[in-house]
Structures are given as structure tokens and as C-alpha cells.
Image 1 (cartoon, helix red, strand yellow):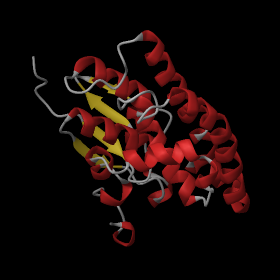
Image 2 (cartoon, helix red, strand yellow):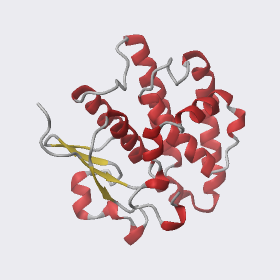
Image 3 (spheres, one colour):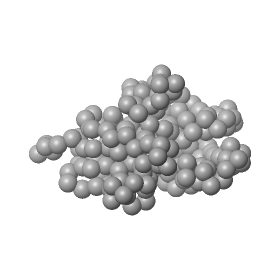
Image 4 (cartoon, one colour):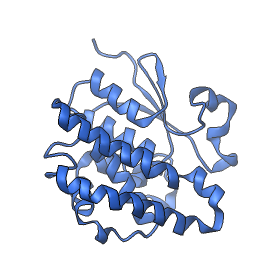
Length: 216
């Protein structure tokens, strides 16, 4: 039975976590309504009373779908993979699926949170070397893992949740002037992925809330 209403994605154009969900929706061919949440304006719209009811962590994304609200990107991705047709985002094989989850968690728990906006606001003037340090530390762990697991993509030759996590993290690394050339496997996979339509249409430069000076 087809869902009767489109999911609603509360998103910020440059949020890695929001971008993951946008990629997943694009790969699955899911139409959705987008509600921008500006993490800078008005002291951060995610801190409003109204939004805090959707996501008590006061972060993006939040997704209203099938009568429930989900507010962690990996939970959203796994839910739509289990409830919607289209290409699988987690492999059927248990070992491959575990590898996808391992890589996804390494990025989503081990790298991205330490250099996200709320942390960098606390760090202050040292935010660039801080972000560089923790991204490099994470990529030093991720590179040898991907050497073992990758084919065309992060795990073999099928796009998965791991790839959905990788591209936004490489984008952040480039924003903070991390030398991606030190990580040839990461670079090669990312270069392949960013040419795919689902990753292009979901890119931060192509969102309704992208500032004019950052639009592609």
C-alpha cells in the first residue's frame, strides 16, 4: 500500500545529516516536502520551541513519515530502506550489511559529531585546526578499512548507506582544507559518487535554502 502523504524533511542545506537523508530519498525515488531550518539565523531556528518538539536534540534532520517523527539520519535511512521499494541501501548479506553499518557509524558517530556546527561554535577561533585534526584522525582509520571493503563503492560494487555517509563527510573535509590526497581510496570512491544524479540533486549548492552566493 502506497503512503498517502509525502514525507516532510526538516533540513539545513549544509548539514551533513540532512544531506544523507536527501541522498537516500533521491536514491529511492521518494518525493518529499522540505522545510528549511536555519541553524544560524535567529540564534538557530532549531532551538525554537516548535522545532524542539520535533527533535528534542535541537538538530537537523527531523523527518515526519508514515505518522511518526524520526530525528536521526541513519534511523531514517534504514526505515525507508525497510519500507520503500527501490535500490537497497543495506545489503542482504549479513557480513556486507555489518560492514556498511560499521563504516556508517565510524563516520556518523566517530567523525562528524566532533566537527559539527554546535561543537565548532564552542571551540571558537581554533575551529579550523580542530576540525582538521578530527577529520584526519577519522580518515586515517577509514582509509585502511575501505581498502579492504571497497569495490566501486564503499562496500563492493553497490551503493549503500556507507556511501551516503561518505560524500557529505568528504565535502566537510574539503571545506576545512583537509588534504584528501592523503586518502586515495576515500578520494576515488567520492569522485565516483559525486557524479551520480542522486548525489548531485541533494548537494548543498542545490537546495531551496542555499544562500545565493553558494548556489551552483
